[in-house]
Image 1 (cartoon, rainbow, N blue to C red):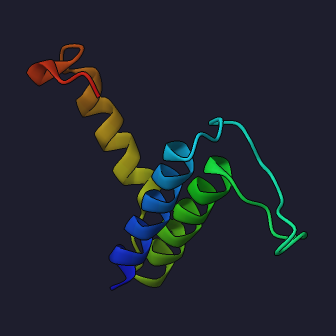
Image 2 (cartoon, one colour):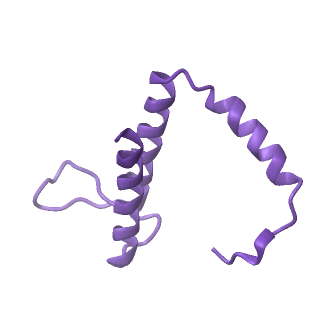
Length: 84
């Protein structure tokens, strides 16, 4: 369930994109004038949820990232010919 909540924040970022918001845009609405909205805000929410999960589960995300970055550096650019 907690991973699904991480995913939901990314889905909200995608919805912001689909409705035409710029990737760097942070905006406020009249409904909730003090609540920031936009792709950067949804990405921040996802990162917060991910890091909170890592703390709760005692996951050393820094070590995992170092391993993954090193592995990715050994792969050719656009492996699998993926464009996105």
